[in-house]
Image (cartoon, rainbow, N blue to C red; front, side, top):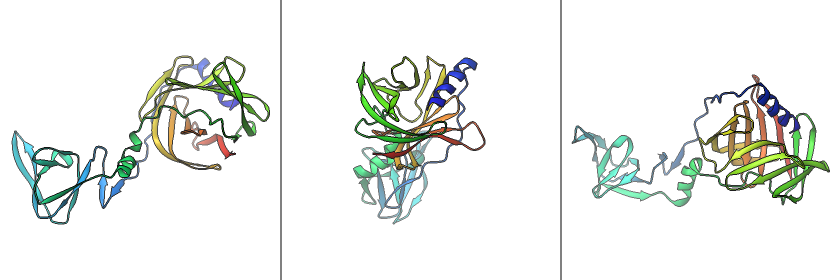
Length: 262
């Protein structure tokens, strides 16, 4: 972690970099009763009898094709006379189709990628953490109390780091000093972007729904943040920082990784 702090200072002295977004893999599809759901889906229709599929063109209703008995389709809106499907198409609301709304648990599965995270990035002070730091080796973190609004953590029994979190920011810095080396602007959601005015470093949230494996276990719904130094930070809600990856070489390097939670 000390190495990360040093790297931050080095970057500040050299220049401010531009955020470069790598291509990301597509998220796994959410399916429900054979229907692949997209963001905005509110339910599905089961076709009970062959029924025409329509669209609007030049102000006129035009038939696109016929949906066959036994087919299913996602529904994005329901109006007085129609079920609205994909690509601005619709079918008439009648006995030819049966509408079923998405259950709440499926709605969560569909929308978790678009959730907003308001808190939970600092370490949980009820736990003890063991990390591996590429520079310092094994580090045992333990909560030692609060001071001036900061939660102070000892590392291997000595002064270590301090966290502070409110509705606007989560800060991580060196204990008993004015040095803050990580500033995360809250709340977070996919695509959130901010510039650290202290160091001129840019940050962007790539996802709030990543699955990350570390020696401490598998964490779901992890927040992935990329900064303009090409470092990636991974936070698990109500657990805290679980991984830091340096992506400046051909092979990404895990430079700070959670080993165990006690």
